[in-house]
Length: 78
Image (cartoon, rainbow, N blue to C red; front, side, top):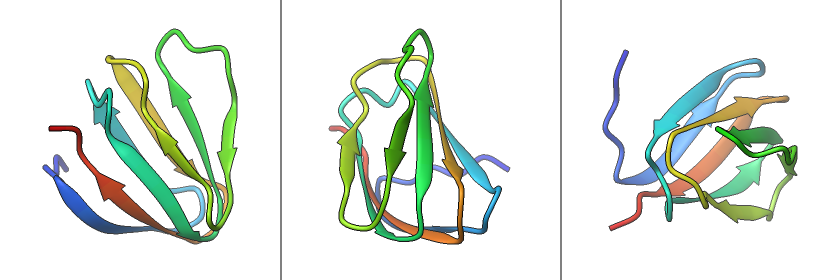
């Protein structure tokens, strides 16, 4: 399924994921749960827990993977 999300909350069940393509500048904030974020060509492991936020800093594919049932606030770059 392909969803175009500009802004809003997103719920992911544990082990669920969402793919963001060319999302540089888009931000996400964890409201509950925890997620792991990986971006093409980035060696960092980015783990976010409630209250943490992250702004995607690369184009290409980014994957947001829920390590627990999670709710995220997402805002696409403009």
